[in-house]
Length: 121
Image (cartoon, rainbow, N blue to C red; front, side, top):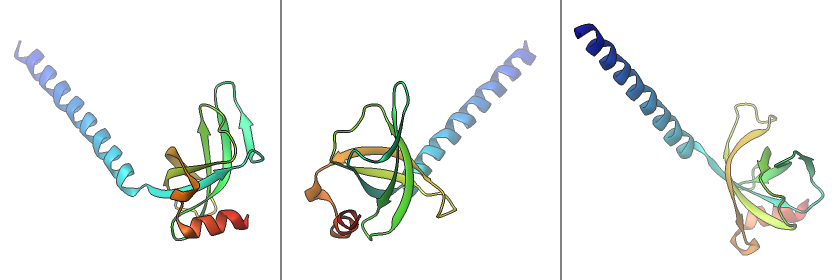
């Protein structure tokens, strides 16, 4: 009986540790994600999958720095539309970065440097 209680206790401790690590990882990603902005105009490099659309775009942060991003959306965005995306940057600046999430924003909500960069393209 003591053997079963020991095994059950060990499994409970391991499960708690694994769940805690996942929580810490989620908090780390949230803390390190940077805010960037993109504009979808309708003529982007996109691939259509049965249930999602994949976009490959240049995104800009509020300082005007560019990052290449690839992300999928569940429904095609009506163009033109501006998105605020949260990006986890990769170590290689030439590599596409991971987009954690996105939200639609109005053009008036864009930082000035982002407007300049987007209009310049």
